[in-house]
Length: 253
Image (cartoon, rainbow, N blue to C red; front, top):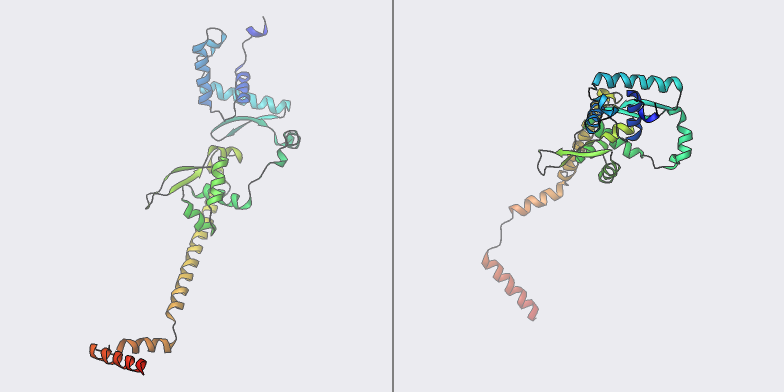
């Protein structure tokens, strides 16, 4: 029997699928690929028409074990709702040197801070991000959108209907997460962010009160002068004419 006539094992096909795709594949997607292929071909491919989720999950487990036992530098990981084939972390330095990844730009501290706020509080508006950070976030949010780590997920019901932002699947892949529930200290971080927002609002309120107090603290002399000016009677029309005549007489002299 030639190599072309050999029926590959399920784990072989799955390994090739994961190697060929850049996006995580879910078991359901893998089953669908088997079924579509079986319908399109009449040869050995048709023998996989009855593929099930249980078959795929079992084969994935076998593939994981084979890669680990043989130390091939690759591993199957569950990430962003699917599975990916990637290199093991221990070989990272050699791959970075090969691909010159060490010189690539990294997320700045403000960008990471903004990204964490969006991740833990999403969906939220840009004004809410700025309220928590205390500084403008226009350029940082725009950069995160361009990097594909953040996306617009809808509009708020507030006046003007501002955009609402959330994280993307690329965010999960970038940080090696299967879901947002795997974010470290999700509950505690949310509490900290909420406390930070309350503190900033309270501080803003104190600043506004101080401004009002300063505006109201006028000198007693100025207050009395204003009051006297209000009480002084307005000159009558005849008085104005007499004053005008006096001014004209002085000018003629």
